[in-house]
Length: 409
Image 1 (cartoon, rainbow, N blue to C red):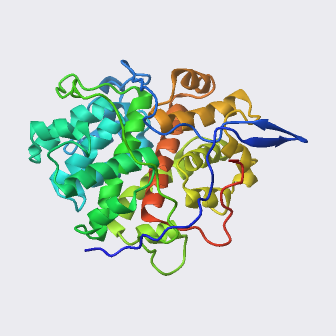
Image 2: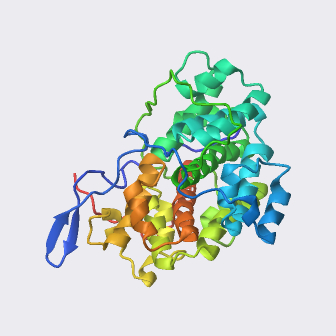
Image 3: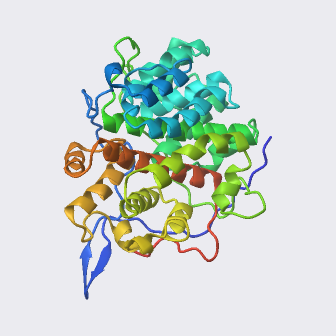
């Protein structure tokens, strides 16, 4: 059993409302603060790719080497061949995909339940088709696959597996985990298993957002489809107030708390480092637009630690010309059209799991394929980071700049 703390702050950090105010000279204008919750609107999925898979005839020597490296572990299908257009992205993403889907401390059955439920939540037809055979090989029966789509309240789950499915729902909708769900899992799981359960959901969410926005289509030989008789409906309780103490305490020592928290699980930390490394060191996006996207998705997920560090010592938002309050106030807070399109992209990926077509077109007027793929990767990666920080309870320091006071009752 893993002993945890579930004490929470008495007050709520921010009150959420539709209206907010922004100083423009001496005037203040109304603006949306946060988008609606994930899964709250009808979802639209693409029936053809926005970014086509790269044909083998066009592979460079570097791309062929990546195919040879991963061909024994993953299908070299539409998803891999789409990501192959940015080889550095393959190298950043694949180690953690393999870790969460094959090498984590969870049983194959529990991994399969978490990944399938997240594929359903994100309505990723590619991931559902790709992982149903894996789930079946792990002993998940056809009726249980159907039950995954029905959700944690469907008849037939034992209490622990219902809590696993509920974990996926809470992370996706609330970007956090309720105490009762965490306590149930912590009653059986050790530290590594708790990490792995959270990260199975979060990494699958990241991948789904990439595939949905790029328009990756199921491979021709993929047979599994979503159950036609299960409507897409999410019934998730509202999030609890933010944690005031960590569920997983960081290691003592130097460095920021998120790094010292993940250092509790060195194998996982090593596998996931490449993703944030791509966003922060390899991506072609300018620091201005990178930090704009990171802060907006952190605000949407209400990840106060992420916000504090990217306003402050990690992202240094103001050094790049950004005003954090305007980011919190959203796309109508005096941005130009191209800047606003970035905020819309972060909002749409958060709410719908996909960049809307109009937003995609506005960004694509100035961005090439590599940059477009990197926009989605930036938001998706920091959606993963936000959910992880909230679930693990990583705490800001007393000197950190927290959320701006932009909301009113």
